[in-house]
Length: 227
Image (cartoon, rainbow, N blue to C red; front, side, top):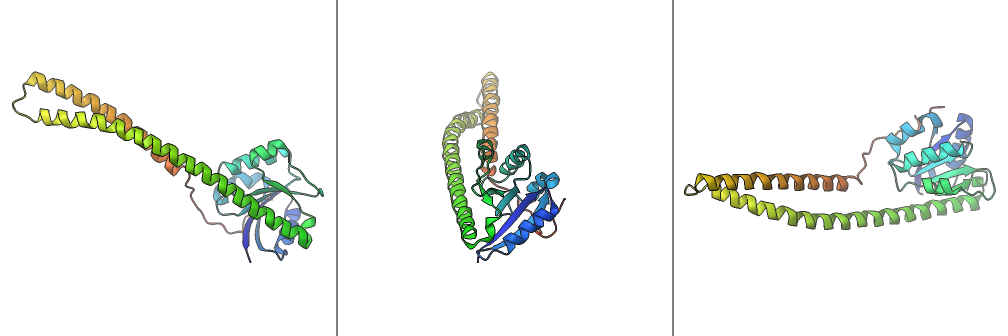
């Protein structure tokens, strides 16, 4: 049986625990649910966004707050599915919410029926595959662009590096007159500055490579509550 770690954002502690019990009673999968209040949701995201499998937000929260929370969560986790919990039989999400990163809406009342529970599981798996495929494309494009940047950068490094080597070689020669050494010294300084610029560009590329990595921290799903 699959196990999903769920972070549930709600305005009411009692309501959150009712939803938690519903999810944990489903026979289609094991759900480990952590309720959290709206006021502490953003702080909690920083700690657990990359440790959970699903983010659920109750529709009782105002649309503006849902959009703000979704954007904050998406700034940390691009892949984890985000669903709204609704009492409407055929719920829809607004364009603004979808643009913010909400993946879909789940009818929390119908979750108790076997068919809806299996449908919910299918939605979760489909959303995960879709988001992972998108992130793979993003990562692939990033690698392609970095590869192009590196190729150009290596060319730009090799030119001043050759000049630096030549300048150092001539500066070390005893027979070179002092006025010539002054020329080579200025040449050396000028091209070392150019190399410094290229090294900074390499640092930028390194930051881009590290941009996709996220720090993982532990989560105890039974202890978070801020109602």
